[in-house]
Image 1 (cartoon, rainbow over the protein chains, first blue to last red):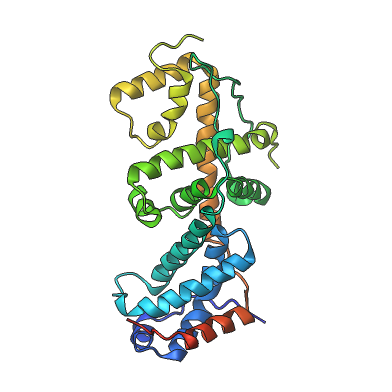
Image 2: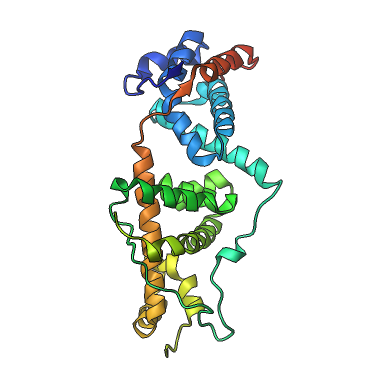
Length: 204
Length: 90
């Protein structure tokens, strides 16, 4: 059996006092109503379903513990979304300590005089209409997933989730300048990974 | 290819700052002069813009994806974990 209830009928005003009081049924209602959307968010960050499931469980337990401090300035679903993103980053951080592949091979190389070592070529693909082209969207998603986690995460937060530099810096616990530097290197590396696909791509 | 003022390496380093509007005027002028004189860097700029455009588009696509199918046993595991949780709301 599965659950895919829509979140649009979640009534924060009724639910919040019950959640703050530790009401078990209110918690179940919240989980049933939001798990589908939040699992989709967790999957964007994690590389396996098992990890996404762990993230979702961690996030709901954090929500249960922290609900007393949630003042209701944003919607409950927005607050939960942020908790899931944080839980996913926490899990990715613990993995990153184990191994982190180098991004150097994905950055362009230059001669001593500053010219390109290999001349970049024009792309036949402009990336237009990606929403209607599932294959192209999948190519871009797979390319992002090949990046080392610390670079992949900054692309996910800034370019996919749409966080500002300052918001991403807070979530990643680094300075805004570090976010800018890492995002730039991540975009350059992503362009390198996409390059062979986009030079020969034919619009379908 | 002759492009005094900025080399290809610097051009690539400044791409994000240029696109985000963070370059000081004098550096931006050198940046824009560079690509006029250097067609490969103009190709690089266009492909870099396409890369960013596609990630933004992907974000918009994934935002509107339908909710994921959640296995019942995952929901049950979450509810069970909450029951066992000793420290409640604070």
